[in-house]
Amino acid sequence: VQLVESGGGLVQAGGSLRLTCAASGETVRTYVRGWFRQAPGKEREFVAAIAWVGTTARYADSVKGRFTISKDNAKETMYLKMNSLKPEDTAVYYCAAGVGGTDLYNTVEKYDDWGQGNQVTVSS
Image (cartoon, rainbow, N blue to C red):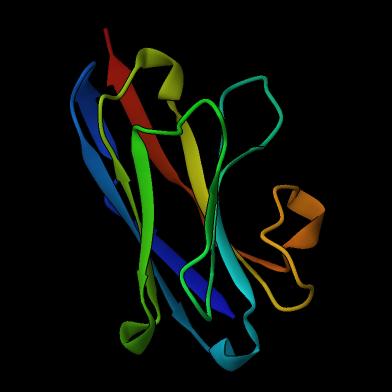
């Protein structure tokens, strides 16, 4: 599965952004898709995940209530709407797809395909 992200940028604290992740290739094999982020000097961390069949979603505690993950199956596209952004949300955001399993995994190793990353910068 090939994943291409868009929608990042620079925003002031309290603002909003929406990230988009478009998929192509063998997308029928996808079970779960997720968003991760990586700040400078830190490990890549889980943000949110959504089941590609059904509507079940999962969020990291740090973004719960502020971020919303959604999808359009017909367009093979996933979204991450980010509201009430904070400077600590600054990171490169990656979308990912997992082709096996039965859960909304929150660990990097459970995902098979990754996008190129998209910078999100929140100024104070």
